[in-house]
Structure formats: structure tokens, C-alpha cells
Length: 369
Ligand SMILES: [Fe+2]
Image (tube, rainbow, N blue to C red; front, side, top):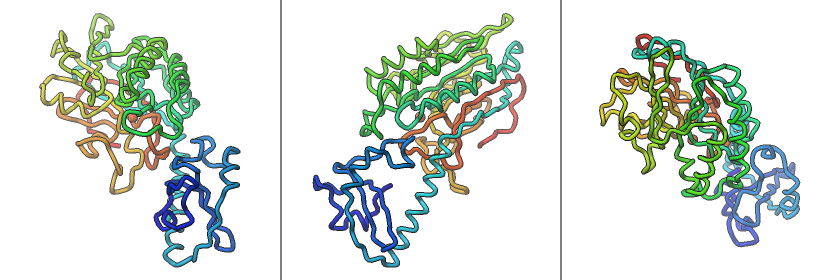
């Protein structure tokens, strides 16, 4: 847990390397002695996830070097410890929540949907964030939920890995090639009559060119057809639907113009875009898009009553947090995603994989979950 300032600046709390630690274990005994256990270097000492809630054998060495510091328990210290304990409990619950996955089922009315596609079932898996924070069991569970729903079409909307080495330090032990292998192996079980399509997310690009190549190769091997600023026609009973896919909206390689080239405005278009903020560009270029399928926001991960998500990476605030959002004749579905990033916690925001049933008909009331 984070080390709060009063203890962090205590003269005894300096690691052997002279660095003040950011994380530590805090134990309080019956003598009101606070025992602090912290790493020699300033990095998180606990192995992530499975071992998070119990002490891993590797920490016995850390525990052996534990310092014992007698701290006068003032009311303020007591209050702070109380608050910290409360936060710990909420964090623990949030951690358990992050391992719970649900199948979000949604009916989406699309006025221009060709009659042959009425009732089309689209399975979506997004924001897997394969890495040390997302166990492969959770990925398999998501794949099984989608497979059991028998979708006609499956779409994967990016952030397959969590290897943000470009901006962040090696998070919680870092991304390893085996995380990607486990992810693509699980995804290879996904099959659908109209195919399995995917687009790349910001984290896939942030992993760097070498890992990005591995992601593209791994997905191809898993039978996923990546749409990188391109479109494919889906045909049924002589009628056509356009599936369009773009690179992540934040990346220089993104081009909706190129993706739509050669397609007719009169054809029903479903756009796969990792980031729902792509709506900003759609408004600018004034191209008719019927449905956007996205992820990226993780639903906010931590959502508080009356306040909403504490943080959303979007200039639109809470608008594209999750669920179905309407912009005129265009709708955007935003999944909360299977995995997570940075903090292994979800509060009021369960992880999901989604099953959209598209119906030909007028748009119904917007849902915003
Ligand atoms: Fe993501």
C-alpha cells in the first residue's frame, strides 16, 4: 500500500540505498508499535495479483529486514491509520471485483441495417491488457463467454497487451512475451461464421514497434483479421454491410479517411475504433457511420455514486464512459473491457465482454450505464 507522508518522512524510514520508499507493508502490534517492511530499492516488492493478498515466500527476506519503530499514536496518526485501513478494505474489494467478468447483452436498433442482417449477433472483447495484472484464466473466461453466446461476428477492439513502456515504468513486473502468447492462444478459440476482426489500441502501439509486430503476427496466427484503416464487406443473402476498422485514434497512423475510401455513404457502416473519441473526427468529416464499437475507457474502473468515474481518458468527460451513446443517427457502444491497467481495482464497474444484437429499426432511448 502507498506509504503515507507522516511515516514516509519518519527518520527511520529510509531504505538501505538511502531512498525513501513509496510502498510498504504496515503491521501494527498490540504494543502500538508500527512495523514497516519495505524494499531495498524503490520499487513495489510484491509480486502482482495472485500473490497480492498473501505474503509470498520471496518476501521473507524483506520481512527479516523489517524495522521496528515506536511511533507515538496521536489522534491524527490513529485517524490516518483508520483511513488507510478503510482504503485498504475498499482496495481489496476492488481487487476481487476486477476478477469478476460478466457478459453484457445489449439490443441495438440500427435504422439502416440491411434486412438480411436483422438479428446479427456481434460478440466483442476489448482491452484485454494481457500482462502481469490480468491472469490468463480471465482471458479464457471471456473467450468462453463469447463462444457460448454463438455470435455471428466477433470483434476485438484493441489494447491486447499492457506494455506501456513508452510512457510508464515497467508496471508491476512488466510485460513479458509469454503474456501475449497466452492471450493470442486464448483468442485462437474464437470462431464465428462472418469472421473474427480486430483493431489496435493505444497500448498496443505504446508497447513499441517490436512488440507491436509480435501482436500483429500473434493475432494473424490466431485467425484474427486486423483492420488497419481499411474496410471489409460482410455479405448475407446478397445484401451488404461495411465493417470498417481504424488504428488507434491517438496514433499518427490513424486514418478514417483512408478506411472509408471506396465505400458508399448509402451502405450501412459499422466502425471498429478502440477509442470512442473517434466521434470527434466523424463529426468533422461528416461521414455517415451507423454504429461505432469501442472500448478504451474501461468504464472508468473506479466509479463513485453521484460523481461518476474518477478518471476517464477522454475530452468528452463521462459521455463515452460505457454503454450505448447516441449522437444523432449514430450510436456508439463502449465496453468496460475485460482487463485493466495501472491499478488492479474495479469499483462499481465490472469487467465485461459484450454481445450486441443488431435489429433493423428506429433508434431507441439511449442507455448510459
Ligand atoms: Fe485499455
